[in-house]
Length: 216
Image 1 (cartoon, rainbow, N blue to C red):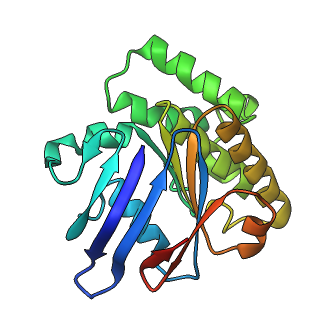
Image 2 (cartoon, rainbow, N blue to C red):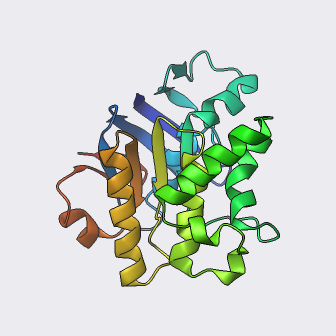
């Protein structure tokens, strides 16, 4: 499903990743663990093609970086669900419209948008807040909206970049339970985190990254 083989991807300033290798199989839950600045976010950006690898190769759901064309980026990203530490919600749109946004840009029919959005909001427990604005929600609720938005296209894998980093312990636990539930229904998860305590509490595949390089 996802395979990175000896991938190097550097920013102009020299930071990035070097010799990163990992795999995520269908339905698998994988932790990508390392300290801040280790390259976790860069690995995820390589997967959703925000960074282009300089060497090695990346395979994501049938897309191969060795033959990848720029025009394929939207189609690749439709296969992925992405959630961030800082939620990245549209503050001028309500919960329903935040989740519907990715469907509208792909010209999904209105009746289908309503069906899909209401379904994922029910899955994350926010049906009753679909008309609320983001600023009316708690941090945990905002992250649930972000998760619903990531799931609405029924992705093959959910990429989670420090999804509990801005939350208090109680909200973080609720988000982790939700992510576990999503995985139990068959969606693969690749979650980047620096919280080693969180990883030790779960019996999951762990890939460690330090100074831009991975090790099992």
